[in-house]
Length: 70
Image (cartoon, rainbow, N blue to C red; front, side, top):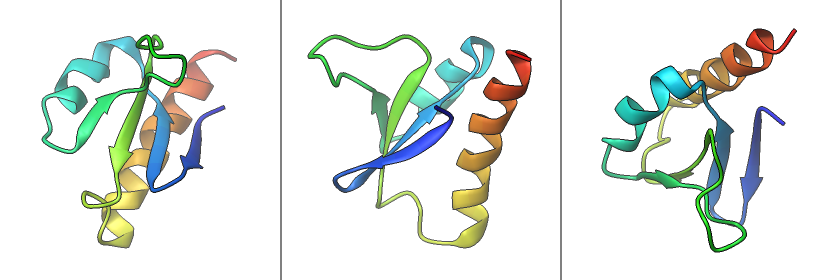
């Protein structure tokens, strides 16, 4: 999975090298679907994604992760 939707949040799988800078953002938090943080996954609140450019940023992060696994 690279990117998806969970209720009102976007789930994104991010490279470990980029995750800290994303988690520093106000409406980004570790994905804790199982009540424990899941490595390389974050939830992004819908409040962050107001424009196509903002959505494309998270799509690109997810794609970078996927491409790193090829």
